[in-house]
Every structure is written in C-alpha cells, then in structure tokens.
Figure 1 (cartoon, rainbow, N blue to C red):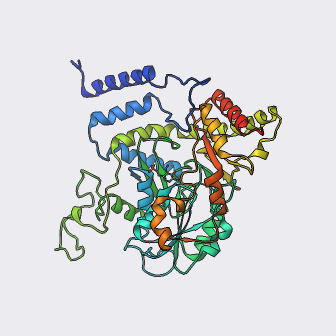
Figure 2 (cartoon, rainbow, N blue to C red):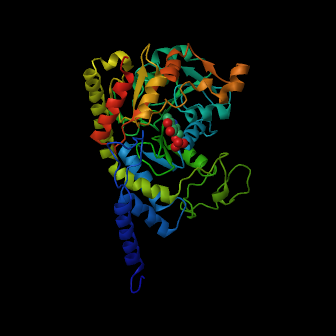
Figure 3 (spheres, rainbow, N blue to C red):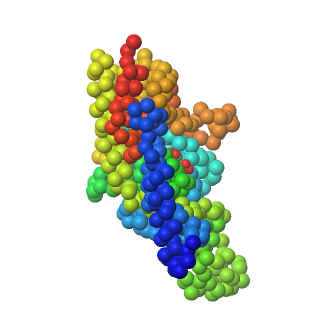
Length: 459
Ligand SMILES: Cc1ncc(COP(=O)(O)O)c(C=O)c1O
C-alpha cells in the first residue's frame, strides 16, 4: 500500500484520508427543525481528527511533543507564564489546591503560607463538587458563602463575615462563563494575605477588567484551572490545565502532577540539567539519581499526547468559539423577549434572565434562568425537555445537601456556612440552564426561545 513512499509521505496519505473520512461521515448536520438540541456538543472537523491520528502514528502515547505545544500555545493565549496539561478539570483543581499545601511554601504568616489540615478555605456550595472536593479530602474546612442571583457567583459582601484566623484561601469557580467579582475578591485576598484559586473550568475565554486592564479569567488569582471535557468551551475528550505566573507554584504543580518527583525532565528524557547524579536530597546518599527523588507525595495526572493533539487543533479555533458563544447568548436573550411578547407577556416577569457581571466580558458556557415566584421549574423544564431541548441544573445546586455531605452534616464538623445559603437554595429549587455552544444555529436558538417562552407563559 505504501510502496515507494517515505514514512512522511505515507503519513500524509493517511492523514489526508482521515480528513476525507471526517468530512464525509462526521458533522453531517443536525436536524435543526425537529432534532434534539443538546446543552453542549463538541465542535470539530478534520483538523482534530488528523492531529489525533498523527499522534497515534507516532505512538508516543504519553505526554510528548503535542503536550509541549499545547502548554506553550495555551499559556500564550491566556498570557500566563506556566501551564501544566492534566487529565481533567477535577485533577486540575486537585493540583491547584494541593500545591498550596506544599512544604516548599513558607510556614509563616500571610500569602505564601502553606495550607495545613484544619485551615479554612472560602468557597460556594452552588457549583460543581470538584471545586470543593480537594479541600475536604485534605482535611481543610470549606467555608460556604451564598451567591447572588442572577449573577450566580459568590456574594462578596459576605467575605469579611466568612473570615476567621484560620482562613488561608479563596477557591471559587466563575459560574457558567460569568466572572465572579475579581476586583473585590482579589482585594480581599491581598488585604488578608490569602491565596486565590480561580476554577476557570466553565469560563475559558472570559475576560475581566481589573484596575490595570483586561485579563482572562483564571489568570488574576494565584492559580487557574481549566477542563477540556466535551461539553466545555473546547475539548480533548478528557483533559484539563493548571496555570500560574508563579515559578515556585509551577514547580510544585509539576512535581505533584508527575508522581511527586523533584526532577523536571519530561517523560523519556534524562539529565537535561546535567546534574542528575551530583545532588544531596533529604537523607539520601549523595548523588542519588535525581530522576527518582521525591519532594512531594504526588500523583500521576498527566494527559496523553493524543488528547493534547486534539487540544492543539481546538485551540486554533478557540477565539471563534468564544465569539460564537457570545453571539448565541445575545441572540437567545433577544429572541426570548420577542417570543414572550408574541404570547402577550414579559419574559422577565416569569423568568430571571442571566446578567453579565460588571467589568466583564463573559465567554458564556450556558444560559441560566431562575423561575420567579409562582412559576414551577418542574413544569417549565419538563415542557422544554419535551420540546427536544436539553436542560441542566447548576450542577450540585446546594452541595451541602448532597449525600456526600451526610456525615459532615450529622456531625456538624468539617465545614462551615457563613450567613445563610438562601440564594443557593433558590438555585437548587428554581434554576435551570440551556446551552449556547458554538455549533448552535439560529434555527436551533429560535426553537429554544419559542419552547422556553411557551413553557414559562402564564396559563
Ligand atoms: C466548575 C467546574 N469545575 C471543575 C469541573 C471538573 O472538570 P472535569 O469534568 O474535566 O473533571 C467541572 C466539570 O464540568 C466544572 O463545571
């Protein structure tokens, strides 16, 4: 089959066939008029598939040249110094949090001090569980504050009340693409010497205007995290990233990601620094092989090069994805008003519509709505789903109500709630969201607006 071909020519032939295959058998078009409209979907073409096969043909399998390229390009996009590719957003959150517990950080006071078991971390209960899980797993104490509606982010007016002499960090997600109040939270963290982790898994591409100019979300705090699970802003199947500007935090994140080792040589490469056998570490014999020196109790959370290869192709399309998400959000917002008007009512009287945070330019993950008093979420969601439109809850709603909290709830230990969680409960009971992913067409958005407006109409 590859007679008289060089390996490079054979590879090009395969990749050309893959592109052809993708064009012919994938993305053959959804039935916009009657087909089911998912809340999220992968958007890809022959570029992703050809990169994936290219990396398969190399058969390096673990992190390799595509991973390096992805980390470089992703850092450049976000404007951060360091990025570590990992196997999921949950792993990214685990690494971000655990980095702040490293013995390489100081044991002193203020920012720079490591988090110890029993220390407190301010967060919210209205979100995804793995923003909070690492805090609990380590034996630190999540302190939950309420959120605002319809911003769906932390209510920053409660931050001071949540503070105690044990508080060491704030760890918050930007909800569904809408940035939390980064000005207030950063200022609070700076004033009290706290770390800030931004869970950016649902908000890649969102921007926020700080006093010194615009920044991508995830890059203002000490560490940011991303997820590349298929529904997210871009995908590599499973995948995630941890990013920071701080060289020490980067070193710790890499160490924890890669088995806890001290050495920074990538997989399969030895002695890049030229000092593999001439160091003194712990109580090991002098010159012990640095490749097997461990400065942390780590994990292995690396992604494969096949995942990274898909990510490299997605990243090239990413700015267009963000624009399309914004356009879809604006279109749906407008259409909802018009559809409700046609039915003789004002949509805002029945549903609270989402609101972008001040100083922000969201890269929307979804379109969140909260049913007003007298409007049943159950009946609205059932009618919207029956019209073929997929809906979602804001993940856990109120995380403290879940079975994973049973033990802690019963014992009253292991977490704290500062003030009440009234809006968190409102979200758990009355909110739902639909998608605005870049593959949506105007016809699909028209159908969504009509179905939602009908479902929420007064009877
Ligand atoms: C805010 C938030 N953080 C973290 C995650 C976890 O990401 P992953 O599914 O890649 O583990 C998610 C998942 O959707 C999420 O929504």
